[in-house]
Image (tube, rainbow, N blue to C red; front, top):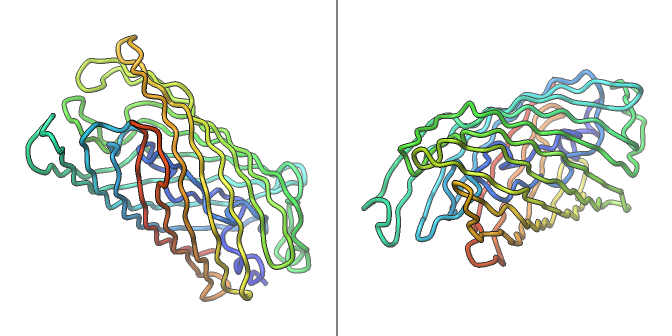
Length: 305
């Protein structure tokens, strides 16, 4: 009864591979993350991300000469429900990361430093605006997917491990709010999806000691074009563009506006009506000087009941 919904992957949930850690500048979603699904479902997701970047794991800011490798693990719970006839969902996300960092010029330290710990917890509320009616499992089995528009609000709380004396932290020590809109339309066996969002950053009053870090909004737009091979297998091409996020430290502008473009691909699969997963890769193909340069491999497994 759930086979059709889960052959297209977990839906209406904004299951992004990196949004749980504010460090990863490309807070991109995966293809088919926002499509409709039945109400009253419980979903559990486990992620493993292998990340190579020039940003600390606790911020969206590159540091000259930094090379950082991270093993990022994410546990995510979500539940779908109906509000006023439209599908909605709420989710809780908890990341954990192990990182290794080094500097080309020994600016902050010599050799390689290691750090590990809990990241900042995220809460997400999702609500469909049109094209995603609230349906029981029986109703969903005969429903035909249609063009949709869905909104979400992501809230990142400063709960992760943070030490103001460290260059490399796991937590960000600041609040982040990210409103998002996701649009999708089916075209035969394919889906075209376009998402846009903005990250709004609170201040970090303990940045690299007792400094105050402020950051302007970081804007992003992404697109996905995916194709269904059969009921249990699909693939997509993905692209993300980010711009903005200039910072001030103790009131001094840093002239470090970010701008980068990432391309990637993903493969989604279902092994049963309740169990499936996804493999994805993304890489920065163009960036403004001083902008994030990041590549990520992702493995996601999910179970629904």
